[in-house]
Length: 139
Ligand SMILES: O=C(CO)[C@H](O)[C@H](O)COP(=O)(O)O
Image (cartoon, rainbow, N blue to C red; front, side, top):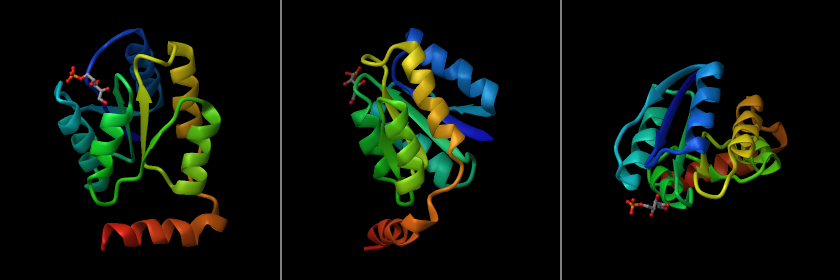
């Protein structure tokens, strides 16, 4: 699996997530300390096919999620617990995971990341809703 990863700061939580991502696949590190550029850079890596999924982190997780979602084709989801991450994949076909590097403990952030990566395909029952999300990119 190719994973694009970007974080605008570094701490125990980001290091734990990055270590986990490196166990799960090849990591393309997007490096800039500007969170809008970071979110968009990870988003572009995903929609341009250089990565299967992306993971973004900033203090809140929200700024990088918003920036990633500005890239047409990105479905970035902010998650803080595994259930949210898993269902963002299943029900929203999320292709970028966003997390707060300040508010998640390292083990929780790794569990959230694992849940996100473990779900590899959306729920077929959500196909129509996911198609409608794609339509919004084209309006
Ligand atoms: O959480 C964030 C954006 O949502 C940023 O990480 C936070 O605002 C710090 O950014 P900067 O160091 O550029 O001021």
